[in-house]
Length: 301
Length: 164
Image 1: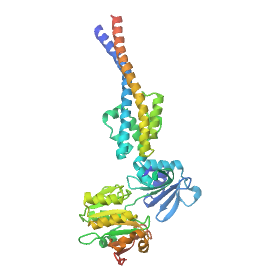
Image 2: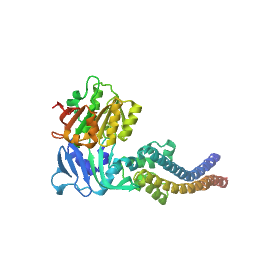
Image 3: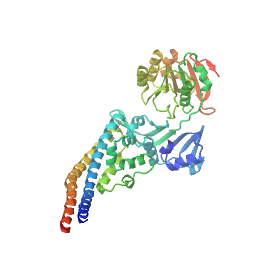
Image 4: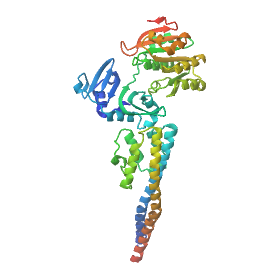
């Protein structure tokens, strides 16, 4: 998909001179050097590959940024305007592009974003079996535990969720799984990547997705990415009260910082989640730091 | 032998007349389909936020034929195979006037570049202008299209009279 989005001069360098699979992020800012995040290292992109020398770096232009966004929308900005209003857009292959620019407001509501000045292309990586080391602690004989995955940005939450769904299917756990893919990142478009027992609702707010999904698709498990708002917590509460298992993730660096989050008091007090999985990027994205139970006692590592 | 030659002569002049009249018919059909395309865009964009490529691909066969490849040329641009330039968009199209090409090119250039409301307004604006051209082209087709066909037949008959 990237070959359809990026200008030829950038794509050719990435393909021929840089190990494509190692790139996590490409940051393109107006009149600034293009920055790659490879593993945990930041480096500039030059015509000859990567460089630490600013002089050799490729400098991005405004036209380049606008063109990438237009191409990523498949030449149909109107079709992704709701995403652009939230500051990102997701391409068909699950590549998430964060966008910086000027927000246009009308009658107190955000109408669109213009004057794009920077983009952050996050390249999804499928890491097969990355959830396996935690799998047995999250599944018992009859059920899957209500689980919350915690990690800082870019440490592999989404990859973990995706692989867990796949593992359930591959091990013939015939649960009806509903994927609430609010940002379109969980389904990267590869055939079978979400397993054989999975339904999907994309680009809907969590509150709507949980309510409609439970009513219409009667899932056993709901998988969703990046809880944050209070209404998300209410939606999780609603689902668990309906007897549906919730498997979710949240931006969070440690158990301590989760306990400090004001929106999560209800979850912690009512012990809605039975398992907490802490990930980090210490040894590369997806490093398993620990698995905790509802009382925050370690059950592994 | 002489009569066969005369019949062939009438057929030939009629065919030449038909060729001239066909140009008007092609133009009329083209603008009719362009108007249909505008309506389809407006509906699909407002209702399902359908992407441009799919709208073009889902166009019915009759309208695709009438558009004389402009849809395919635009899809090539969407696919990144060509750039959006006049020469690329109007490749194989020689029945449009320069000012018509300018207007259609501006229309295609505006597609997909704004939010639903703005895009819808823009499409309606172009639709009104295409409608004006379509009416004019239709009346030209009625007037000159049949005229050239008749002229072809009459010219053939005149030649027959002269030869006899």
